[in-house]
Amino acid sequence: MAQAARKAVKSASKAVSGASGSLYSPLTYTPPVAIKLGPTHASRLRTHYENSLADNLMYLHYQHHDANYTPPLPPKKAEHDPNNPYSIGRSPPRPRGNKPLRPLATNVGGRREGEGPSAKQLEKSITQLKEIQLHIMSKDALVSKALLLAPMFQLRAITGSTRHEGGHDSSLGVEIIRGRKNLPQWRIRRGVPCGVKVTLKGDKMYELLNVLVEFVLPRLREWNGITMPAPSANRDSPSMTGGVVSVGFKHEAVELFPQIEVNQDLYPKLTGMHVHFVTNERGRGSQNKARALLSAFQIPFIRK
Amino acid sequence: MLLELFQLSQRCLTRQQAFPRRSIIHFNGLATVAADKKTRIVASTILNRAPILTPTPHPFEKEYYAYQERIARSISSPLPTDVYFKPGSLLERRFALEERQREKDAFGQDFTPMIGLPVEDVGKGGGKSLADQLEEEAGLEEKPQQRTHRADVEKDVRSLDRAGERNLYLLVKKDRKKDTWKFPQGGVEKNEALHKAAVRELKEECGPNMDVWMVGRQPIGHYEHPYAADSTKSEYNGAKVYFFKGHILAGQCTPDDKEIVDFAWLTKEEIQKYVEPHYWEAVKDMLSDF
Image 1 (cartoon, rainbow over the protein chains, first blue to last red):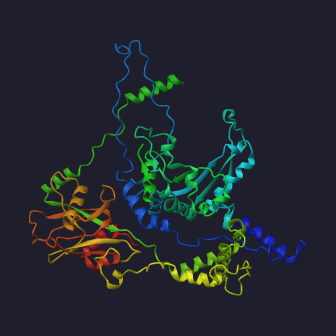
Image 2 (tube, each protein chain N blue to C red):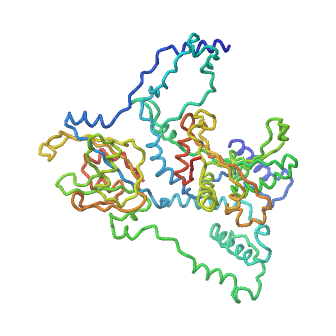
Image 3 (cartoon, rainbow over the protein chains, first blue to last red):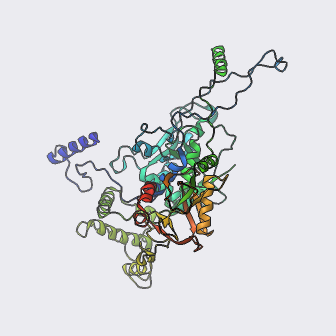
């Protein structure tokens, strides 16, 4: 912010003194102010979340135990006895422990009276949508970088997001994803552009969610909802404890976005994309909480 | 390293459990205990109709949004019309005309840049100018519905269409002298779970014509009060009321006119006028302000 303001003052003094020698032109003149665009309307889904969903999610996910409560441990297994006839000739059981760490669960409530988080912190701990990320991985781009332009254009059209839009430095617009590792079997090399992504937050995020739920998903053929992981799936895996719900859409779904649909001839090759719904939930059970939030926005889920 | 880990894990296995196992609280058990103490356990449902309209912005908010919209319009790059419209097409001319109107609405006549209108094809559109055609179409457009419903004008508190911007709650009236207006409630039967009792009582009092979704199985609030000396329920000295939240998805309350004689869908402030002060104190924090 301060940097932007300093820049603006510098450019203003330049414009006044005319030191740069350029003439005033209404087409190129930028006013000497750091404009930060605010919301232009009240977001419908955000209002829905604040007025109806937040209350319900707090009641649904409220931890009724006090802070010291630990869920009962599973029944203890019988200790390994090498002299037992069953154990003779068998290898001893794998030692316990040495499992990867998982984040602590974020809970609403679960505090003793007179201590713990304030009402504001409690409000923050209610399940909420942090951001939505759209992501396209393009295999063709590994061969020719220019082929990344079509997915970039596609994401620009869908989200309308640009770098530093509305004077907000936090907005990164459509970003290029580069390879992190050399993977010869997939022809990926370190630093090579292989995809694009865009991160939406705040009202823009709710706007995209609204379009997805109102225009795209109801018209999708042979798609009944986001498939949930099987009940036997590992509860402590990173995908189950990260609080992120991810779904992939084929190009048939992308065609249904009104921004694309209005002028489909412009996009000769539409590609499918991944949508990641990022919530504030972490730890065991966070996947269920994130799904409860999304289904309240009318995103369907189905069993495997 | 692995051996150390193994030994550590073995030590952990032999250690006493740090936390004693905790039994699950049974509300049924609570009910029987309370019955010995002559306290009646009651389950009540706070049935909510969520807002169906977005809130009307405050005049200041409205002005702020209009201001931000003008800024957004002035700093955004213009639409590349040659990409989206066929040059010289009707759509292109229509867009240019509409865009000029939008600029005029945002910045006023004096600040509107002259957007050159593409040349009009003579003979198309039945000899009418595009401006006339647009005006004609505007008349045919379906107007948005009113934000106030007929029920608001007629002050019909039984209608579910009233006060679209607010959360409404169902209050029922019992035929007695005191404490007439309350949320639907009733006593828990023996060996019945609290949350099931709340749904059963709601169905008994308000009829089967409601599609209801209960928000979880946990009560959202609790209210304890003694009975008066001349109470009809002489075997109890008081009651513990557990409130559950529900949402109405479809249908309407249809009371039997015997136990329940009237019902109303009310906002938070209106509920205060209907119920007794002690009841209001107990329930006010469970209701949404919006």
